[in-house]
Length: 228
Length: 106
Image (cartoon, chains in turn green, cyan):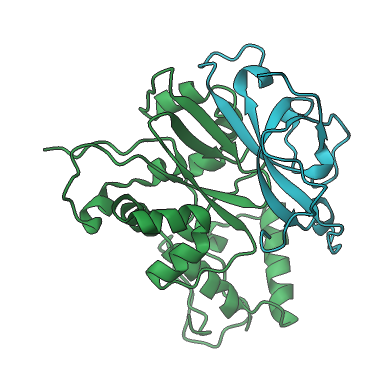
């Protein structure tokens, strides 16, 4: 991201960009042009501009971080799952020290003060993840969480009636399978390692990764067997 | 972080029966309301972390607290739980919210 005041208008109207910019700092955050003058938006803008003016977080830093967050997608998680399905040694390392295993094997440099935990599904245990207190999510592996993950509805119900919520996602599990809800209340972030579906013998890691949905790594879905 | 080992002698062992305290929450409390007073079992010791209820106020977050993963049977958390009796919920709970209680004989 350059510092060249690039405005990303999505509402069709255009300012006159022919003359010098009247406010030489802080390109707007993506939603600024929505015309909101809500308190929270004004507060956010004021803090953002103060951080920029005081040289603590520049507008450029902020936008680089937004670009970085946008670049993270569940595809990273899918590759990790596919590798764990096909390489027992990697799976062992992944479960023991997830971040180290991922960084080493995928030549990534993910750093986080948080602890990453991989929850392995088995024929007896189905894991599903929530953050009842806010919206904690393994963003470094899955990107920005879906809106429903942050909704009060999901957060309050999945700990109380998980099977009903899972059924709404199309996931119905037999009674002898333990539905294990992990509530991400503190400094841990969870990635579910789903069960490898039947009928995938001989598939490559690239083919397998394509089967792995975001929801299967949150635990609201399972990975279905590929259609013949 | 788990690079720092838990304080030997203080840590509850996996399998220990515990109860989550019913106490007034700190301002940035990480113990969810629905688990306060619930009986569970230590599933895992995750190590020492800075106390988030202090970090939230720009304090150093000391003393560091042991973070546990505590597992609860859903039927012990919700009196009217409608799912399977096998179902569980696991939450990350700091040591100062946990008391050890006598376990059931298995």
